[in-house]
Picture 1 (tube, rainbow, N blue to C red):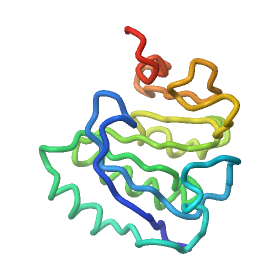
Picture 2 (spheres, rainbow, N blue to C red; picture 1 turned 120 degrees about the vertical axis):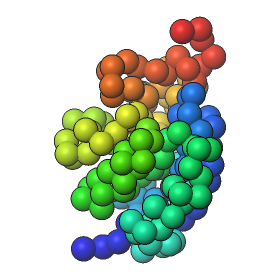
Picture 3 (cartoon, one colour; picture 1 turned 180 degrees about the horizontal axis):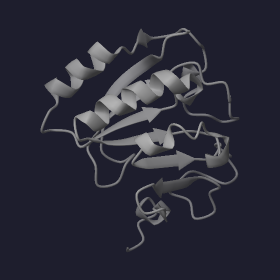
Length: 156
């Protein structure tokens, strides 16, 4: 089994509205969407291996400062990603996955471990979550609500 790897790790505020997220930008994305802003993530085997111990250490370091763990990709390593999501949930953190896949294309075993899910390939002509014409969708899986409006500056 290949390892789940990440090319960068950041604290982010905009990717999951209302959350302070520890974000891992996973490598090995097989989708290769035209115009992708993260094409450096395409190469498999690139970056640092994300182990349970590493994630637990980071969560301990940021305890009380973050509210969510975000994975930008990684769904192609479903079992490993599920393990990382479980660790985050055990720490009572929200979880989020950004994927270019559609919800029905995801491993359904991931969904119970996610709080939020961003789906849809990047289509330059449709824009991202901040564009009302986007094909992408940001969903709160607890309620099923589409939260795209939070990226578009529209009132609740």
